Length: 174
Image (tube, rainbow, N blue to C red; front, side):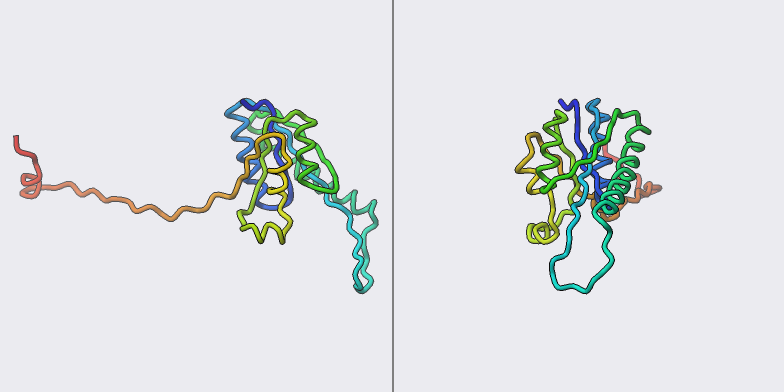
């Protein structure tokens, strides 16, 4: 069913959900995992803002790449711990969704696993969610993972054995 699964890794806490779900899917199907992260783009502010110390583009890329490698190493360690074959790649591009879709195609992945915080459409537009664009651009199925909601405690039944007269009344007649 799945031979190679691409898992999108980023620095949001919800990304751990995609990593865990992707590892579980790979364990069940025997697939190899490809952990992938898209480097952030260096943006120069063009508005009238007071001068601030900005990192140079070279320094920005070095720090972004180091952060990406730490994230990917953590994901790889989880997969390796449960004996799932894996590798990691870093990419960059003008559009994160297109970059992810192109990597999945280039690496011949059968599915993409990505995390979502479960926000409504307006919030996704405002925060720049990659999920809608990825679903449109992807050449393969996209599994969107949300963190599991903590379920309310279930009521438990207490069974009290009947004794004496109550037990005799409850016993079926033969």
